[in-house]
Length: 113
Length: 113
Image (cartoon, rainbow over all chains, first blue to last red; front, side, top):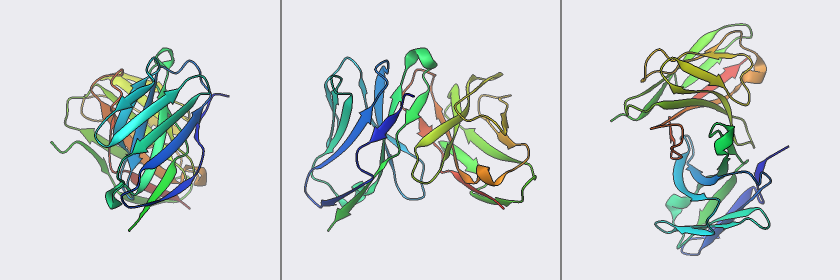
């Protein structure tokens, strides 16, 4: 069936380095992709979204890249900080499916001091 | 604004018991939803509501009921708790169904013994 998933369940990054979190999806009908950050003991927090007709979108210290040819999504975090330690989820929305969010399994990012 | 609030934060139930997880938001959001999060998995949609008086099923609705009598509140009822319902439950809201930035509550950790 359709699914959204992440390549790696864990990622360890040195403080100050750039982080790249990957996500593969299979639903070519998805209209939007969203990245969420979930800190320990908290609910997910919206980071950034990208429309399916875009290749790249930048936010504050984050960049999302979308490659529809290989159905791949990535989140790049610049100058990773200790506060970036969290679980990161990619999610997709298909407008014709009532805008329902479908989440991937998540990648746990640990920032080393 | 308090945002999205959930009560209780923790709950232990015995198999067969019923209970209601409370969710409220003070942002005048039309769209509200319930997710469950299990270890190693992304969030899965249980039920959602596009406005007061309107609810619909998500991906995993069995064993749960919802109602939306007001814009602010969206309670989730477990009719007869089962160990398979042990999970962390998150409520989320957004201004409208097509608004991709959903705001999540802090979660309710439920254990069914």
